[in-house]
Image (cartoon, rainbow, N blue to C red):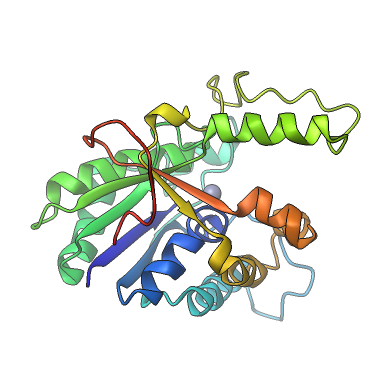
Length: 265
Ligand SMILES: [Zn+2]
C-alpha cells in the first residue's frame, strides 16, 4: 500500500491527464491524494450559477465529484489564483500560482506529503506539456518538494507522448479522419516555443487507461462547467479511447526505457 500525492494546476487537469492512473491506484488499494494549486478562477463561467455561488465554489464542487469517480481519498486546495495563459494580465496577479514563491508553495505541499507520509509525488514535465505558466510551475514545485518532504518521495512527471501523438495523427490522416485543413505538426513549437509533450525515448511509464475509461469519462463529466470538457465527452467511445486511452510518465533518474504498466505496482 502506497500513498500517492498528485499536484495538479487546475481542477479538471486531474481528469484529462492522470485520472486512469489515479483510479487504477485506488482500485489496487493505494491511497490517492489530489492537491490543486489553483482554484481554476479563470475557467468558463457556468450559465447556471446559483445566487451567491462563485466560479470557485462550482469548480471545487466539481473537483469533489471527480474525486468520488476516481476513488481519491483526499482533496487539498493550495488556493493560489489561476494565472491564465501566457501573456494574460492575470500572470502578474499577486496571488497567482505562476508568480508565487516556489519555495513557499513547495513548503505548503511538503506539509501535505508529511501528513500523508507520502511515498510518491506526481507533477508535470519541465514545460508542463504545452507551456501553460501554472503547469510549468507545478513542475518546479514538485521538484522542490521532493527535497523538502521529511521522507523523500518518488517523483513522477505526467507528460504527453509526442511520438504517439504523431502516429495517431498520421493514422487519422491516412484514414481520412483528420480535418481537411489539418496541418497540425506535433514537432512544431507550441505556445511556449517547444513541441508538445516529450519524445517517447524520454518517457518511462505507459499506463493503459482503457480498463477504467468509464471512470475517466465520469471524472471529465464532473467538470461539466468547463467548455473544453464538452468536446472531449462528445467523442464516440472508440475516438475517446484513442484520444484518452493512454497516460504517460517520466521518472527522473530512472534508466531509459519505457515500461508498460502502472508506476506504483
Ligand atoms: Zn490546467
